Length: 328
Image (cartoon, rainbow, N blue to C red):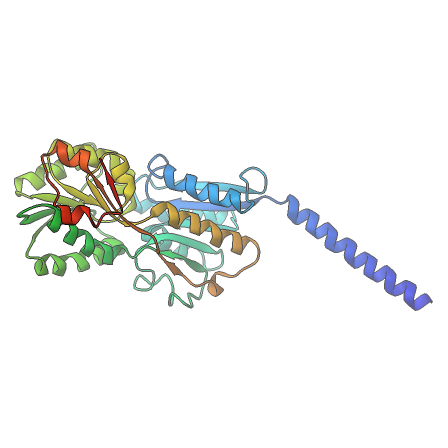
């Protein structure tokens, strides 16, 4: 009888401790770091999609999670400092948008889980060992941006009659930029297009100067590499494309939402929603090394006929028929 009572007491104490631990865990606020190379306003649409998906999964800001945002304001040289700041705060995990923030976060910590989204080629850039077995503390989503640039160039040639020169806006330095240029240069040769590479500065006159250069070089159309700083400045870029009457194709639909002509690329908001799923799994105990990197699955080709009319461009029917959405 004494033995049974002893076992009962031990079991009761164990269950009490488990219940106490659960109660403490339930009351805990998990701190998440968010590192982005662009601006808070430029990233708002993506951050909102991320937070909405977290809410659906039961993670409410102010209730059981807090998000520490760090935006580099288009200054990549600040990323290491900002990543280090998040590490010092001892966040539970860090969400990164783009290759440069992902590399900065990985350099800052080998233990805190990192969830990447919108990274073009995480294997080539050394962020993960492989997509299936990432290893280390990094996992998340790959956007395939280098390969999609080639497709955008093809679409641009089909959409703009007698196109011979394309102005390519790009930012100096960075692994992601180098990978995209490596894809685009031979693609332009194969398509018999002259690629006018225009390095762009993000100062007061930098973007306008880039468009002026494109006109001086007699570019018949324009495109940008896929990068977060351009995304943050998408409204201004679209305005300048209209001002200089240059047909343009963009990496994301959000450019068209601002009045841009065309976009072909991954659904960025979908990537951020899916990043929330990784966060959910990791906060519940999963290890980044055990979570395979997923590739983008949703692609969209959008055409804005209002923008085409404003610059006097008639887009061929065969191109319109390929679009997922045509805005009239």
